Image 1 (tube, rainbow, N blue to C red):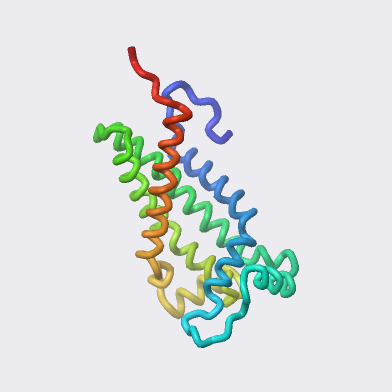
Image 2 (image 1 turned 30 degrees about the vertical axis):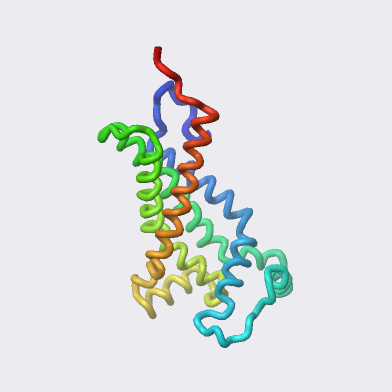
Length: 202
């Protein structure tokens, strides 16, 4: 819909890939924000002190207490940084994977097979982590209920911890995103090969 009609063999521009990925990321997380919110709150309910009492007794209890505290709107706490985070990571993952693959095929001549997909997926995960980490940190901190808004979260984090705080947990985050991208794109490429098998030249 964003690219319009493409000629046979024509590739969408990088800008088109980024816009498409950001659009799907925005739509996806707008629906999934309540689930993401509950996940973050369950993961961070004790913080760094395991001796603290748990705030929630499980997933259903977290949903109930979130609704009791803020109604339906309470499930969309942190939606702005979450949209920014998801759209940026989506764009970095999907657009960069496609772009890396296109460039390697064109300039290096690597065969379009699993090793290429693995390399491009790993690079896409690293790219997503570079661009998405600041949004990821902001989103997670807001959902944990520590800040009044995006500006308060970003300014307080920067003022008290410095710019490096936005890249806390970079290595585990990269491992998560890289493994996710490797699994997703290799599976996608294999399925695509079955659904749209390459045409053999006579």
